[in-house]
Length: 135
Image 1 (spheres, rainbow, N blue to C red):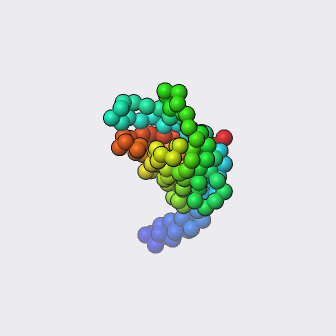
Image 2 (image 1 turned 90 degrees about the horizontal axis):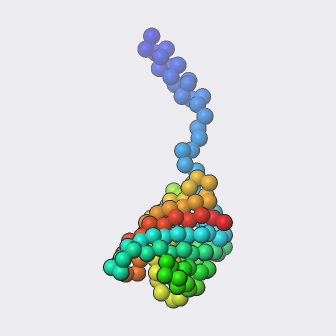
């Protein structure tokens, strides 16, 4: 009886379709225009930041675009990058007007490759949470 059960279980598992639980990510899937939103806290208080960035076709994921803060100040994104690994973990940085502003320590790109969210540190040692939507 035990041999029949093991054989039946082996046959059943062997016929089960194999599908990945999480499809891998590629750097090329970040290319294009993203709207990034950050809310954070540092020694100056709470803040929000909105950025329109373009992730270049280069392998470094170089950024260009603009960012605006909750005080109405805006500036050109003059550097930084967004990177994603095969496990869909996002890292990177945003430089505005020559100042490294945000460091994305860890984020996740969703299965549809159109949304991301994560956390990081700003240039004053404060922390922020961010989300991004591909346009």
